[in-house]
Length: 65
Image (cartoon, rainbow, N blue to C red; front, side):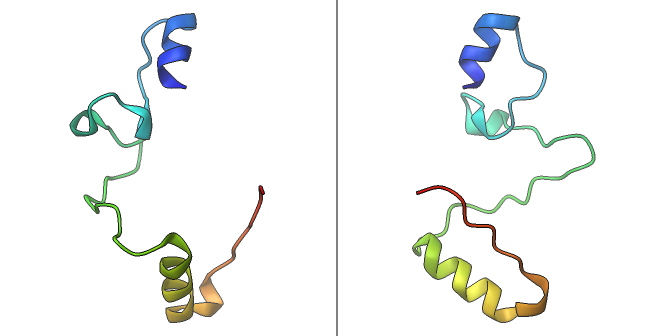
């Protein structure tokens, strides 16, 4: 998506997670990269584990198929 946007409107200043080179990913203004790598567990398991640890602080918005 970022490549197509750059093709249409010129070089992008911020590409977020869509950078060609993972080392070139820059955080948005006011944010910081965590340095975390992708978890080895399934996303649903990770979501359940994390939300169980802090149930009052988690809201899940499930959209899509």
